[in-house]
Image (cartoon, rainbow, N blue to C red):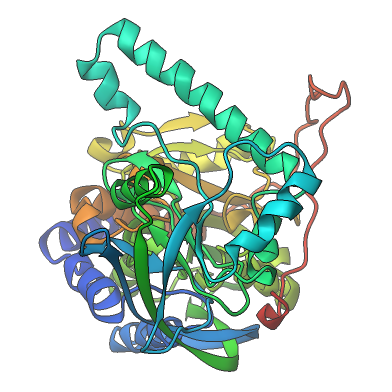
Length: 500
């Protein structure tokens, strides 16, 4: 295309994105209606089917591509109630892939681990006392206020004192666990085997009202994560000898072995169909909330970018794919499977653009360790509107990423894959894998900018007369080992989640 045609096309995409954005509607359908997208759940399959239906409504070729199987499970109602020394409903939830208690639930006294365990024999003597009890397995945090709140309001002396005492308490807690002969993971199985009727944990995320929610490690008894405010209250009651009694109802369904998918949408290239641009985002989430910023927003960016491309650039020079990957959260499984199953895409990859760290505007693009990445990425960025481009720092040639998100599956094969790193909007504490990662945390102005950026990068990479270079830099010496760093190695996916 001529520079005049390029300008007109990009202006049209920007106008459409700003004046007729579909992001809010798509976010509502994905997050509010379908909800969390934990691999192996019916909601994950509904999300894949919804994505297929959405792409088809834009007349984009699309398919759900099976890459493995997983443990099928569906979350039900969790209700956690303290019955003694008074009645209070507690805020918390069952952890993923945990067996159901049934509607009757489990009621028992709550106890803590001993404060001072001498050694493994001492722990074994204490262990029978867990029989018939609910056991608290997380440290009682000394404060429920995040550090930034202390920094703003506390005296410097008070803040430093709190941090020092917390650090000491944390090390003592960790040493106490080590003294049992177990670690924080393996001790769960020991407690269950000794007759505990349930596990209560608190994975605080160092923010007001926010916990990280992952998977259970018990085989037959409930594991619930209780929010810090209620967890520390329960802990104090148990410490002071008030013998709190809690009832847990945690209903869920085991669904056996179920298929797992990637959703792949495609605009076929007209001149170089065997060369590819991939728009990459993982579609799955943990299920403490609805996975809005991890990675609903990345998925929305790729959906909206493909809508813009289909409307204004329906016959690209190179083939443009969208990959909405499954089971990234368990080890990049969907994208690793795609790399194994589609060597032709890896071999023909012109560029992959991945987004996966929250709702913020893209502020950094690295060359990923490719020596000549400055040449072609700079060309592709050139026509991006200044109000978007001015926020982006580039790092060329950069370093190859080791495995934090799906671009790493391709990069490990030596293919040019690039992460669009976003401003964090308190991502790590407040939304990453938490019970607060919901629609209301989306900053749609930033997501819209990212969709425009991605669509333009895809268009420019498709139109580029040159094939992107794969020449790698000579990696530097690792100062910790004194040895030269090596390029990340490909890893196979876990295709059978029933082995968990």
